[in-house]
Amino acid sequence: MKGFLGTQAGLGADLNLLIQVGMGIALIAGAFLARRKHYRAHGICQSAVLVLNLALIFSVMWPSFHLQVFPGLRRHFGKRYYAIATIHGVAGAVAEVLGLYIILVAGTNILPQAWRFRRWKLWMRIELALWWLVLLTGIGVYAIWYRV
Ligand code: HEM
Image (cartoon, rainbow, N blue to C red; front, side, top):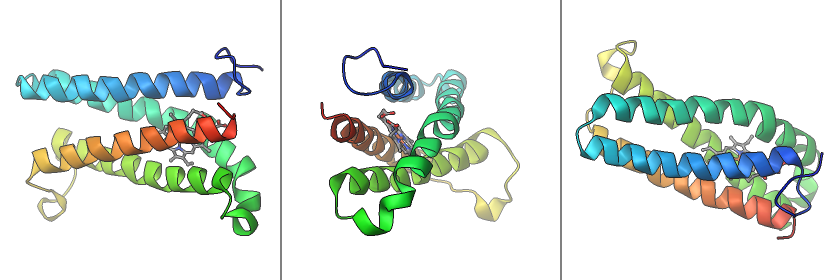
């Protein structure tokens, strides 16, 4: 089905793009909640983004990667179509896993003491910066794939 942004992209890609940009902004808003010491609201906001993103990875991005990138990856890695999607996918997977790990440490008691970090602020800042890097490379994927 054709997308609604007037590019060559389909509906899934356009929706993903819009929701991803919204989620990137929500994470920044969530960081400000923490700054104002609204820790519960901060935790809910950041966790909601992570879970929603997990759904988008499994419903849109992983299937697309599997279908459009994997088969030609070895032969065409030098081409920017494949290179940007691979860099984006690997960094995106790291950002998602790191985010889930932060939720486990900050929001639960599941992990043993030795697996928990203490410098919460540092790790959350690293995660936010990485996330935005992934978001920007995702916008790059969209621009290159659909010739914006
Ligand atoms: C923090 C995590 C992630 C963020 C913020 C993110 C963000 C984005 C954005 C903004 C787009 C452009 C919209 C689109 O073309 O659909 C995109 C596309 C894409 N992403 Fe991600 N992404 C993340 C994780 C991943 C992961 C883990 C993979 C690897 C499986 C991946 C693979 C792709 C692919 C293949 C596309 C092109 C989809 C298409 O247009 O058909 N992304 N991503």
